[in-house]
Image (tube, rainbow, N blue to C red):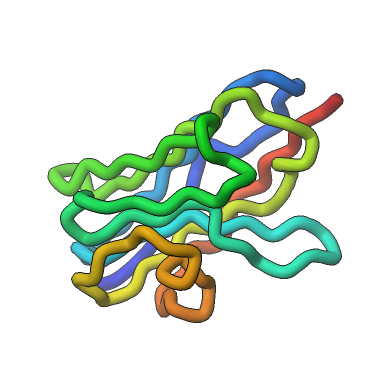
Length: 126
């Protein structure tokens, strides 16, 4: 059974860190992290290919966020450092069946991803 369950969200001060986890049962697919702030469209934050060999990061998070996956544990992580108030959003993990490399915004577009978790709230206070 395919299931995605996020955890690790919470409230943190500016400059703090959080690590999000996505338990991706039944997946060996490309995985991505997405976020949606109130009144804004859902956007791709970071995505990784099925074999972990390629990644994409949105410009707004480059150098601060790191995506990783542990296929043995069926878990994908998003380490978020130097958090800013503008990072506040509901964060979702999602998966899609593709063996393509993931290096572009187009490959990390929400419309490409078929399976979604329920989301976890991240709030960064100033």
